[in-house]
Image (tube, rainbow, N blue to C red; front, top):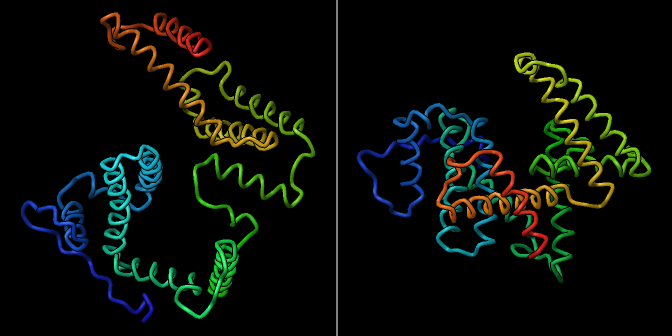
Length: 288
């Protein structure tokens, strides 16, 4: 039976204060209750939850890296919450429910593992990867037969904005849409920065806010151009940005530690003092 033939089941909200049972049906009933009685949960949409799903995936990655079982369990639960939350809302819309999602996943796993469930024999993981890609191509052809056409850049996978930007540029480059060297990418970066400055220079705060969408576009163009420079240097823009994030956190942590040693908190300090400690943090990095 296809999923379209199934009757969508909306979970019945749990009554009273539920116990933690470890059962999926009880979790679905709990989510249904939250959609009824929690003001924040009630106002969410599938679109409003997108940033949270992305955030939880990243936090799961960090937890796995930490190798702390309690953190990993918590973050896996948060990822599961996103699945349950989305399924609840789609069920409310009469489109599909958790059972449909699980069925789709089961069918996909069986379909993509013929070497496990059928007579096919694949000698190693490389052969499995080749066969996996062949099956995905067959699935895409089936999607196209349903009117879901695919363009050349549709193969770019979902991910952070930096990851997608770099992949989009890489795919376009394979098709000849690229500068020969890094100079063109740098010139484009200078051009985009100049356009952003034009939107900001000699403008009042009110004028900038009134034109904030245009500013947002120009800022995005600058970031995209900077990613292009990273790509031309064979650097990963995501990794480079994360390096900067970690460096910033480390230096700010140094400021907090030094203030605490002086019996002060961040709120007790001012920009001049924190800036001086920031420079001290940079010096500490060089000497360590």
